[in-house]
Amino acid sequence: MFKDESQQGVIAIPLNEALDSITGVDPTEDLIALAEINSGSSNLSGLQQAAGWLIENMQLGVAAERVSLPSVQLLDDSGQLVEQQTGDALVWHCRPEAKRRVLLAIHYDTVFASNHPFQSCRRLETNRWTGPGMADAKGGILVIRSALQALERFNLAEEIGWSVVLNPDEEIGSLHSTPLLNDLASQYDFGLLFEPSLPTGELVGSRGGSGNYVIAIRGQSAHVGRHFEEGKNAVAKLSGLMYELDKLNQHQGLIVNIGFVTGGGPLNVVPDFALGRFNVRVPGTEQQTLFETRYAELCRGANAAGYELTIDGGITSPAKPETPAIDVLKREVGFAFEATGNGRPTWIRTGGVCDGNKLAAAGLPNIDSLGPVGGELHSDREWVDTASINQRAKSVVTLLHRYSQREFTVTDA
Image 1 (cartoon, helix red, strand yellow):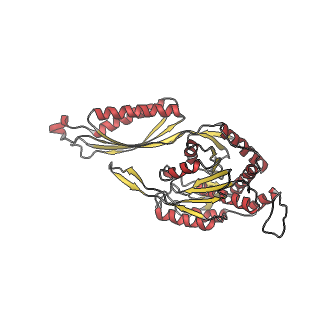
Image 2 (spheres, one colour):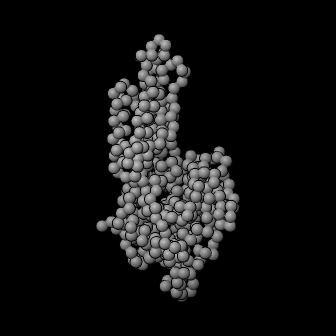
Image 3 (cartoon, helix red, strand yellow):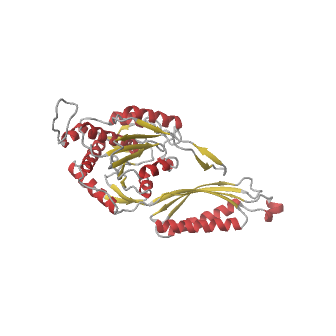
């Protein structure tokens, strides 16, 4: 039983009244408003507009802090280093002095650029809507809002502190916000992330790792008919290197996806430049080591043959295995789901990555799929079950209330 300080005297309020307060609010209108603000990862003005909406409408009872994130240098398609900017991260801290603290996080950028045709929302069925980022991950933002508003209104988590961080760059690898996430990781007992649940409601228990790479090769141009032997064909060298990387797909669940190549020019000139981009997925550290060893060998071989290589990238989201701490969180999330009528969740392993990978690698155990049910992400068919926003929020309230009441602890010890 808890105090309602908005009334005169002290009135006992059961947990289920807090949960009922969530049921009484339909988040659909706000979700539409937020989703129809284009916040594609490279749309700086759109990210700024979305951040303004969030600062005004989250209403968590504590002030929002804008955190400027550093620019990063990336190789463009001509092999030149360019500065990439991003929007601000948004952070809310409640009871930061508490000894027991929880981090709630999700991104507010989307994969849809400002010129993408998918910009508006529409209803598909009673509780099913389609729209850019409605599931991934703006619906998750509203799960956070509903849960924390109920927790604070009914004083259900007075014994713990919580923080919310919303970052603007997850869809491009969180390169700008990773230092912030790493710094925050050490300050909390566990994390909750609000990527969407699977289309049929499953949650993610563990994830593989991922990284993006780019390699620029410079050789020597020459006239094909007169001095062919003096040339060093960068396109041919890159093609051979990429072919060798592609062969790694046969080993231990490792995935190397060659996604983009460019280079060459007139057909009577030996091309002196080529560039390729690829994504790597690793089930675990063994496969990561296998890939990194072979990649280094291939690059050394190209350098030894007289080619100049510029390489960038790496495994920025290490694999996220299950640990004793995550097992505790899975158990408690399951209890919270059952207690709020959501049924015991099914847990799966996925090759997809998110900021939960980064936070786990930085030492923060977390569950990273507590957002609404949704599907067909990153496409113009993306959909969300709006009813699941309140359902998930109720489970989060129950989970954090139990943690505040010391019903469980989270440790890998």
